[in-house]
Image (cartoon, rainbow, N blue to C red; front, side, top):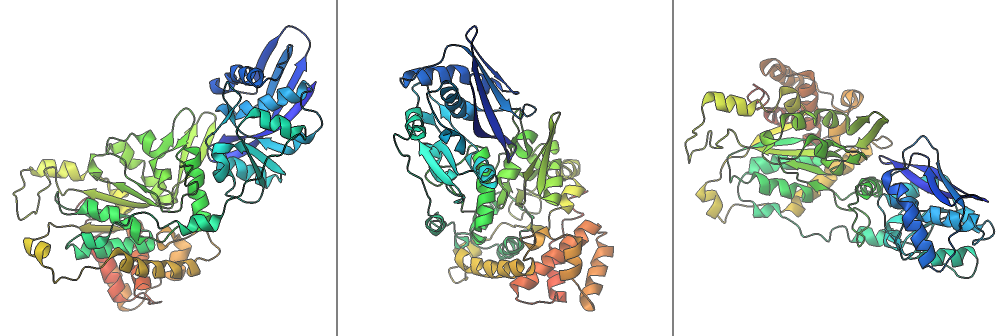
Length: 512
């Protein structure tokens, strides 16, 4: 007898429907799974057999063939345990009628028949929603994440017996719903790291405010102990909370990576990823036997902080170039290419030289010119070109540290200006995929970053004097657009251009 059960597979972040076809025929007992199953899928034979028996159900004796269609796509993970078990029970007549065929099944089975949680639930549910299935049966652990879409009935189960009773009409499984608004209300429950905790460095704080307002990449250069790391960890709290669309995009990535906290199934605060400088290229970009998102994609819609920037492997740094330009990562394999989103804000920090004290008034630099040149050249010109803002973070003086009369703005106050600037950008780019000034392309720059008169002359002089590339020229315009937004000016004035130009001061100094 033949039974067909629906499930969902994953290729990168994209799901696809899988028909789990189960055929039981007479002949020598056997259990075969075909359709490009991975080792974890092949091992489902033992898990399903034990789960069915330990639930007090009959495991049929005969020739069992399971086909996972489409057969040309690799099937990974234990998510097919549940649909295979349901298919075997249906094909052997223990589940009668066609009720089971109306649902999509996702879940891993324990040997005792309980259903365990799996990764990648959100993108799987999205596919089932697009195909207009009436309901999805998911593990109890994944119930909140599965219900985030809200456009399909979610039936969480904790054991195989529940499904059998449900399909036979002997019992009911309660639908599960999630209050999205309640989740959003808890978005700001994180402890706030306040800019007011950082004394001095007002220029660096201003640069970070501009970066947060426009989503611009920023490089901070300064001696050890000048506050670069403290400042970087506070940028996240200057940015606005994620929109629902951004939250679902980000949650989808974390779901595939298996990083969802079941207590907080929706990612509501902008990601802040801070990989160690020993991170490999694959760890940053993504990849592996089963391609997984790397740190760059995990920072999508958020911040990627790279401390000790030149200490990262050269190949790892160069791998940043395409994501910073295109907002996506493409992982190519023999079987095909997988695309991961990577619209992020890069915050990088570095010392001015290997010893860290070049230009520091408190200690003398011990590095030779060759060592300094070699250290700076670890960051290539093309990569530096893609960083919109370069800012020096000098060591603060004792007077700045102890002067209680200096007014220090809190993160909440700075954030108000950033949010207002982001609202202007949201209105400007309404109906497009652009959410911040840093993401503007050539067409948007021509439309929204027009300059004339003294502003144009100032930009021309800087272009020729600093020998800027076209990319650097465009990034100056983008930063100037953000500065004008913070000033609540529709037109870009010479003061906005002048401030944007000063943030390219390391363009040549650190590229050569």
